[in-house]
Image 1 (spheres, rainbow, N blue to C red):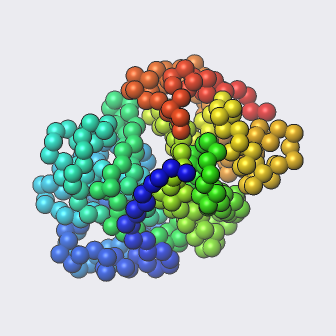
Image 2: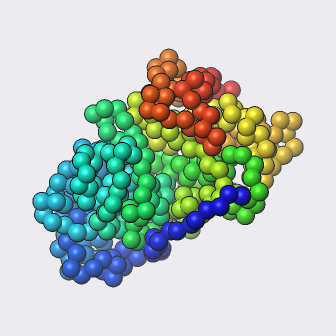
Image 3: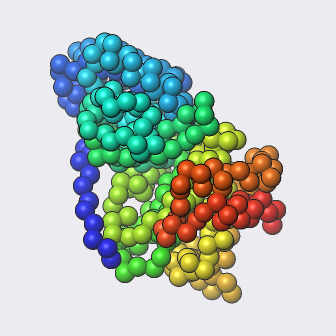
Length: 386
């Protein structure tokens, strides 16, 4: 196992009715920008709870953060913070709103040029405003990590960044806030969390048995609870288990000291930027194709995954059975696993490998995934399902 340092300062407040804790968690003298998406938090009562909890604070609302938050929208929030001298941001929504908050609190303090440099890696984050989160969708894990993904639709880009300056000060996780989510959004959250785990688990076989077992526990729980949320969307225990899995999937713990892949995510980001499919939909398309293309490097972990998690240890070809069973799970959750499921012709994806090559990216745990291999992966994703 490689050496590592694990530091996660996020204070998690979990359970029913915990939005009221905002009164305790946010400083009394804070001028708060409440950051939100398209208005669903008004329909499900979350907004009213936030307003009540913040009634003694000076606050303003900012609506319109997109799924896959856009740079230009985020910059409008930054301008408002600067002009009105706000000093605290509260993200109320899913992972996209939390991701947007991370960029906004950093960009509001960025004085070294174009804030887009934060996302491209050209600029270093030296300071950021404080922010907290009220989570309404279990998926990205952004509520307990320092990573973010920002899109810039004007140039067709979607890029990740991270900094220890943008950890949330706190995140409130009330599973009841997820009851009203559309079934497909809930399913996407489950698949997103599942792939987060696999990106850290299905790499080279290293002597890290504890991290493997922790990852397998999350995977097994998502396999069990994921289909239940489609059948019983207001089952508190199912929602709570999924929310906690999603948080644990990407808070850094299971990735300590192990090699991590993330090629599926980077290719998926490009599919989303180019064709507008949801993040989890892109992952469900790319992951099986990538696992098949990179089978030789991942054979040992695929076999372990098949035996310990998916119960296909008696199959003639355990590695292939594991990939096939993963696809079946994604489809059971209602997501497609082929480009054709989203009307994307294979030839339209050929440029994605060149785009990533031109940015200097080499992906995968061994940095062996280049533009040529990406085209092969997407070629596999174009093959017919069964």
